[in-house]
Image (cartoon, rainbow, N blue to C red; front, side, top):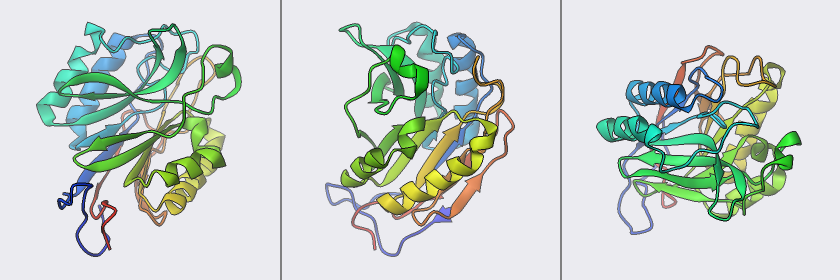
Length: 256
């Protein structure tokens, strides 16, 4: 599926940007088993056929607030790095992390051929998360092929201040990893539409499917891609392993 704006799209350097194929994956979760989750993430990356692939919140550990933090230098992550390198993908995955100062966060990691790094730290923590984790500093952008990709994690997507901060950075695309209860599906979809319209950018939501952790015996799934006007370009069901995909053209701020 293709979302197009009229006219060419340009990056910060004035170059015309190519369309970006994106995917939202919802692999089955093995709680606290990073090696098993790396394997399913790597398989999803190879299946997705996309330049940018997003995964749910805390996808490498499952939504277990007692899970050990993930070290970006852990050799256990190498199969995912190799999968990304093999198909030319940038993956955005969820994990708990610990900084050099010993502060822990809920994070989005960027994984590509160059390795693993922290791309975003969740700003608006929910419920019990705040007893362990510290909030991140706010809106963040990672760049993929000249496209400015703004990031969020679950509760962030429902906070007006986060949406305003994201809109202010002028993103070409917004991506968030989620874990929602099945009865929160309508709100999940409504948030995607609100963010798309507020930012003027397409939205990719990767939402956990199947059992997600001790407090999530079932989850909403229905990962999807929305156009900048909120239109659904692709959405999958609640089945673990499903992948939503779309090719987005005209993402640069010079478009149209």
